[in-house]
Image 1 (cartoon, one colour):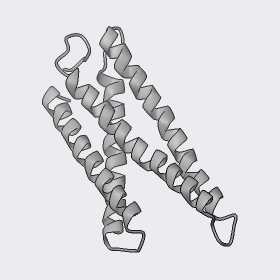
Image 2 (cartoon, rainbow, N blue to C red; image 1 turned 180 degrees about the vertical axis):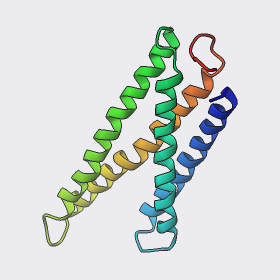
Image 3 (tube, rainbow, N blue to C red; image 1 turned 120 degrees about the vertical axis):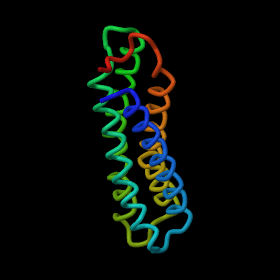
Length: 146
């Protein structure tokens, strides 16, 4: 992979993360079914693919012997752990809403907080990681491109 292809993939990842954030805001603001939610599902899948590709490219092309490479590598591992935590938050959302016939205000509030942590956190962390890659892209020694 060339430097230019990596940079273009970073821009694609930023675009899909921003698009997913905007769809997620609309999804929470308008809780009725709309054809846009089917499009949101496709955007979600594209965003996850783009973010995991960024993770794999970081794993392959980061120079972990360099200080900047070490720091970026730690951010990648923190992001992977956060994805697991976010998945648990999204599963925990169901615990607060399915246990009662009429959900209380407290359980609805907790479920929206868990959704926000789960959905928005993954997209924002993906944006953060991609921005870090772009900021440190020209850093000498941090990357091992062909």
